[in-house]
Length: 480
Image 1 (cartoon, rainbow, N blue to C red):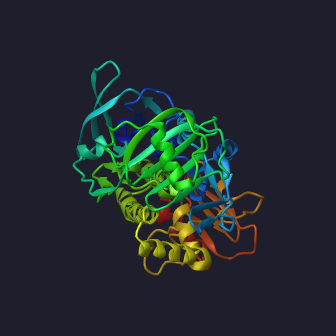
Image 2: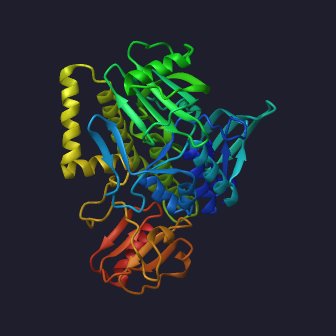
């Protein structure tokens, strides 16, 4: 294969595109990131939290400690009324929310991708796309206005809700607006809120305040009586009034550096793949900001797709492996739409029966262990499992926890470099040609289960007792 025939073009340099590009480049796959914006990291981003499963993915890439140093940890998050989520019992090294603006995440992921060899084309806009049996041709317009054609084996559209890539391949984006005239403002405050993330809803209004870490706070608020078009100007007095209605005070907001009005949609593409073109992140699904799941879900899309593209392009797997991206990630996207939509609809409740129902649900989530664990698993991402073949071991498809390994290492450390990890109770010598993509480890305990973990940290195969032939068969099927 020549370089073009085994390369990938990623359209969009948000967190999803950057993680994907970094993974591909680390795996030795030539990757070009096409971004129509100039090369700068904007501090006007909307996302501001990282959840446990995303931090675990970052740990498996060696960057979790870096973002943990920059961000601020939150162990409990109050949604409204009595409903709060206590994260300290999460079965994860990252039993907290990390409050960290999106632009800080982008800094880390962009540097990782660049150091691994990803090529960036900023101020370059996609104007067209065609594909054939051998690859994809992307028509672009560069910073000087000149037209150019780029060619790759596969293209990933990580270019947001108004995805040019999605439109070019004719994939619909059905859904609807859930809430209109949300106001967003970055302000200074004279009175610091008492919590790291401050949120409340009173039926006719809700407001959320979170610090950026640079002397500014992000405010997202809504007032039922002020549902105006997106292009209607936003005044600081309007933001203050909505915040006071929801939170009881406005914390002395002043000196806004950015204010805007937007609406929040629930939409999902019916297919994340069209031939050699894939969608990830907001190009594939958008939902309300409730629960802070948007950026995190896109990053999980990237982690799922990247190792599969690398395996196919390097000749270790058949193209059919790429169909599992749809099978695994589309149901997760649908669940996020439902859960985030449920949170925001509960926040908007105004009728007495709806408020009573919200209170009852909050009480159940707060007091019933299985319900609380399921809610935490969905919001933080650690509770999802992928489909497993009939008759598989009960671990297959589950997220693999960061278990201790012999020699003092952890699973996430062994996953670095985009490799599979085989955890066995005894020494096992794999074939030499697999060693660049497979790490063989032993349990630190006396556990007898043999487990094969995929590069994205999910269990590919497991057995309670397995001889060398059985293990080799599993490696041949999954590692290649």
